Image (spheres, rainbow, N blue to C red):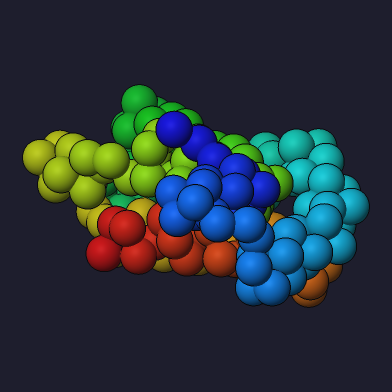
Length: 162
């Protein structure tokens, strides 16, 4: 079940039957302090999602063997599936960034993904390369501070596939 930073902090205290300690309060302060930045970044990403994905593919995959005949992105159907997956990762990374918590990525993206990709012969290295390109392209659009925040969620997806 998806949590946000607030729910995560409260649940941790509740399980222990304690009031929020200084560390918990600081975590919440940091979450609230960056709230406007995260909302602005999410709006920018939503308005530019197609461009982010297009530039990421161009940067990481387009001119490699993967898009040539015999490659895993060859044929329109495979290419479209790759684009669909990248859009999915971008959207869920944005949700995680807004919530300030990566739990949605485990639940809705990573659970069984590596196994599925392996069984379908999807090249995980190329997938991670495209996710890292998406991290760079996104950071160039949303700015360094929001880019670092989004980077945490792209890296989380990448490490979950590794």
